[in-house]
Length: 331
Ligand code: UT7
Image (cartoon, protein in one colour):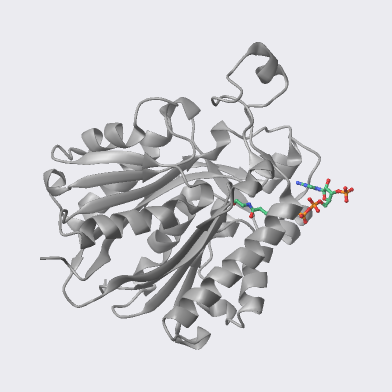
C-alpha cells in the first residue's frame, strides 16, 4: 500500500557561536556596513570555528536538536540525506558519518549536491522515499560550511555567505498534509556564473590552482541575481497555477536567503505581501543548503497545521524550483 503524502513532522537547527559582523568584514576587505546592508540586507553571519570541525559537526548538531525535541529513537530512522555543497571530504559520504554519529544504526544515507537548491531537491527525494511506502522516517539535513570555500580577500563574495545547518523529519501523513507539488529545474549553462573551478575532475588540485585561488567560490553576482529573480518567480507562478492557488492563499513563502533585494523582487513580481516572506538573512547571510530549514527552525512556533507554505530556491548549476507544502502540526 502506498502512502498518499509525506509531511514534515519535526525541525531542528544549529548555527555556530562565532558571529562575523559587517564591521569586522570592513577591517578585512574594502567594504562597509552601509553597502552590505543596503545591497544585501545582511548584518551578520555565523562562522564555524575551527573550520576543521567540518560540515558534519553542524549537521549532527541540527539532527540531535531535532531528535531531542521530537523524542525519537534514532534507530527508527530509515534514511539520512545531507544536502551540502561543502561535504567533510570529497570522497567519503558525509551522510554516512552523520547517520552513525546520530545513532541511526538502521539507516542508509547519501549526500545530495544541489548547491543552494540542495534542500529543496532533498525535500523531493525525502517525500518520494516515503510515498513509495518503503520508508517511514527520513531525516533531511541541509548543512554548509561556506566559510571553507570563501576567499576572504574577495569583497564580492565574502560579505554574503555564512555557515549553518537545519534538519527536518519527513513521515507518512494520513490526512493528506505535507508535500503537495513541485516545479524543479536545472540549467547547466549557468555553471560559468557560480562555481569553484578547481578540485574536481576537470581541474584537480595543484600548486598552480592554489596560487591562482581557484579553490574558492567565484560568482558573477549580477548575472546570478537576474536569473534567481526570474526563475524563482516563474517556478512559484507555475506551482500556484498547477494547484489553482492565488498568491493570497499562501500563508508563508520560505525562500532561499541569498539577498534581501531578491526577496523584495520576488514579492513584487508575484504581488505577495512582504509579511508572507519568512526572512532571517540579516542574522545568518546565505547559508546555501541550510537557509530553508533554518527558516523553519526560526519560525516553527508561528507555523500552524493546514497552513500553506511555498518553498523556493535558486543556486549554482543553475538549480532552482518551487515546492508547495501544507504544514502538518501545531507546536
Ligand atoms: O545563493 C546562490 C545564488 N546567489 C545569489 O543569488 C546572489 C545574487 N547576487 C547578489 O546578491 C548581488 O549581485 C551581490 C550582492 C553579489 C552584489 O550586489 P550588486 O548590487 O549586484 O553589486 P555589483 O556586483 O553590481 O557591484 C556594484 C559595485 C561594484 O563597484 P563598481 O564596479 O560599480 O565600482 C562592486 O565592485 O559594488 C562593488 N562592490 C562592493 N562595494 C562594497 C561589490 N561588493 C562590494 C562590497 N562592498 N562588499
